[in-house]
Image (cartoon, rainbow, N blue to C red; front, side, top):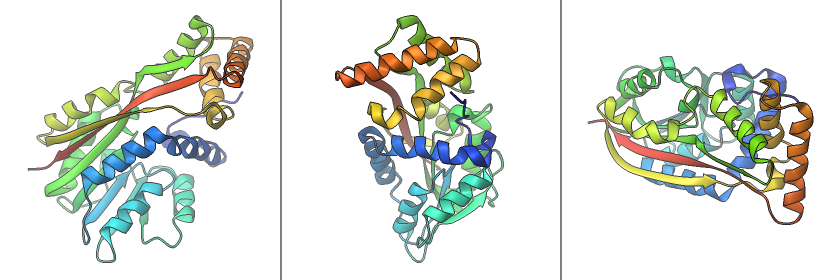
Length: 265
């Protein structure tokens, strides 16, 4: 079991493909598809607008923004990891989407130059989320919209498995992120920056066992073992119990994600 970070800015080039596999598996789940559909409908990017995705990952959602902005608009994906940006550019070949290096702490855009911002599963990693929202607010034009989507790791469920081992692994996810309960705090951060909250959405991320068996599950277990919360043998036991449960139709892994739409006055 090899531990892999979930933070793009901490991933070496060799780990990007592994993270991309996790992101692809998550993107294929019904919950993520529904929440992303809600996010794009709420953001409602119009032809000619300038749209930005912060933490664009594999670039899939920047392509959606680019299609909505049309030939007279612009869609930009921003990510701190050069290897991830290279992957996003490769996957977006044929799309007018653009990609730039950077992060939410210092957006490389002038004030009031962006119409719509999408930011998914970034705020859970931030040590100063209020400052990040202030930076998003700075680049938004008056009337501009932002959709933040993030996970609330305190809602995590894993079954089957020894309850103590399961709790140790789930607690590891809480310790791995700066803001593990980011999902429930999004509206407060946006309101605190003077933005008007217009809508909210939520979905549970419920992947099938086969989609996480070789990616997310071993990453979670490896992290717990790496921090000494469980032994390597206990981690292997938990993975075996999950596989056995899946074989008999008794496997469940989930975490709830939340989304908030807000507008600059």
